[in-house]
Length: 250
Ligand SMILES: NC(=O)c1ccc[n+]([C@@H]2O[C@H](COP(=O)([O-])OP(=O)(O)OC[C@H]3O[C@@H](n4cnc5c(N)ncnc54)[C@H](OP(=O)(O)O)[C@@H]3O)[C@@H](O)[C@H]2O)c1
Image 1: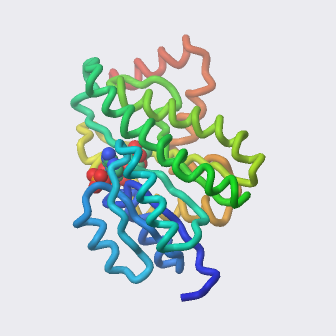
Image 2: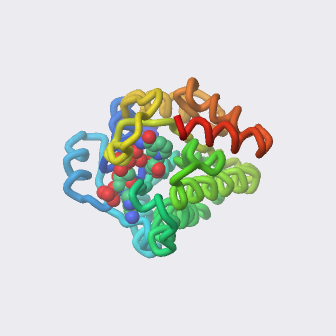
């Protein structure tokens, strides 16, 4: 193992996008720490000689701190954090259920904030490093049947924009990942046709290139979908509400 081997911590790594990103970084020779709640899935991933399992529930702040300490003990150093944990239950989003919305916020928003908090001092003292957060195009603007997930991702994107400025002063890069529809256990629950649906490996390729080969703040894909959503984002309310209403009625 080379002394210059780069090191990454990935949350939400037991399935979908996080898992594919872990496998991609491992193939590229990085040393990879993987976290999520399902230990057995992480152990399967850790059969790869570059991947190491650190189970974790992101709603448990003390566990996050402990896991990060364990990773540093094992790895000595960390270059990049990729925070990808997230939850989505489409059936829960069709009416307003404050308890379910609280749970979505706990995992998708507060869980990520606790992960960033856990690594903040380490990266600030190191005066370099990279924190990347997986948000979603679903957070660009309010969408129908998205009373919890969309707001959690909107908050996350705003948080990422905010700490971009604060962390830059310490030489730390902050980036956001905004995927369109990727075929994972999360989107398998959707009962509507998903335009431009892509595989987790496609997402991992885009994410690896965006994180390692570019300096962009936002890594978004596939462009056919994300640019359309970006266009909708800048429209005045009258047009935005009219168009989305028409689109969902079709
Ligand atoms: N797929 C898409 O089209 C799409 C589009 C935009 C954004 N995203 C975002 O991409 C990220 C990954 O989603 P995915 O599509 O790959 O879905 P996924 O396969 O369901 O992955 C979600 C990951 O989050 C982990 N997770 C959930 N709750 C957790 C908790 N309390 N503590 C620790 N880990 C937890 C899950 O692991 P455990 O269950 O083992 O804990 C799993 O590894 C999410 O943030 C999602 O919002 C996905």
